[in-house]
Image (cartoon, rainbow, N blue to C red; front, side, top):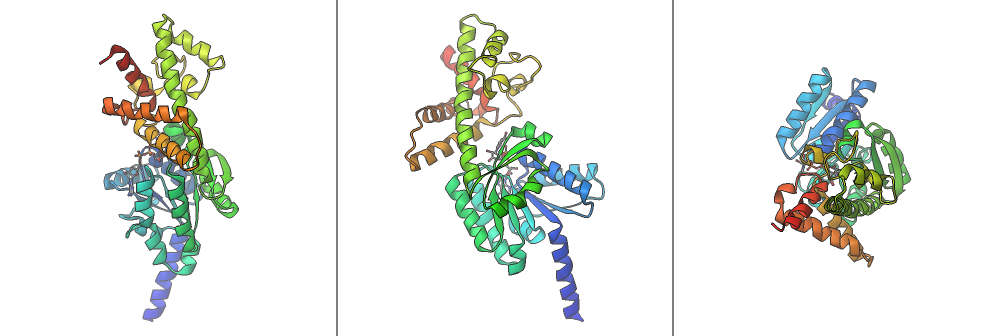
Length: 341
Ligand code: NAD
């Protein structure tokens, strides 16, 4: 009898686990992504289960509170560790700052991999991971290889589109992994984004993301330089931005994320909110370091990338208050340099 009860309990746990999705890392991006994923999944399957986990328990509590207020009746639990998340859910997404946090969440004692190792072989094999963190390609490949050795599947799926895209559910996902992993990821990622691109094997999504952010990081600085120079030449910033955006210099950094307030009619870039709410300068410096590191290890010259990295680093040295502000705030550092203070 006792044995039958145990078998039934284990069966019920497996049924719930199969219907459960966990999200680890509820920061600026993760909280918006998890909200879209959970709310759209819940609309289709009201018996779905959700699990959240963050290093700051208050973030998980606030997320859960907001979610149940908007979706009364939803099953959403908070777990303390990534290991608990793997025990509870067959599908697990992670959105963390960078390589050290991914290593902690996946490989440490209370992490994902020990969690997988303590499950049955069949349960491990049914588990699927999507990591959307922007991190080092080598670390990502090695973590994915460790996960896959347990029988589970994993893809890297870093994103482009920022907090606005995360909130609107219009992110681009750059996926690295096997064809099978990509196919498993597609229906899940569709709840959070509208462009899902298979870039190649494990690590390829990150390679593409790092190359894109290398371009972006350089462009944002040069747009700030040009906008400052133009004003010193007596140009109205709105006219100058209009010229650049309808000419060969136009790019996202000038037409969407222009660093000069009120230079873009009908748009409201972070500079108009004291550079709040965009992509943090500290995260851009991290991405430039990822690019220069991988370039060094592949003997690929990055003269502009290296200069841009140095400029983000020296901006944060002189203006640590800009670390969490949008990276277009490098414009403020240029202005400060011009004033020589
Ligand atoms: P964030 O710092 O706001 O969020 C990270 C979250 O991870 C935080 O809530 C933090 O508490 C949590 N965390 C850290 N260590 C943890 C651990 N050991 N266990 C559980 N939770 C942990 O960062 P973000 O802006 O959401 O960015 C996340 C990733 O997305 C980064 O790799 C970033 O480069 C990338 N990205 C960000 C943007 C953007 O506009 N913010 C755009 C594209 C890509």
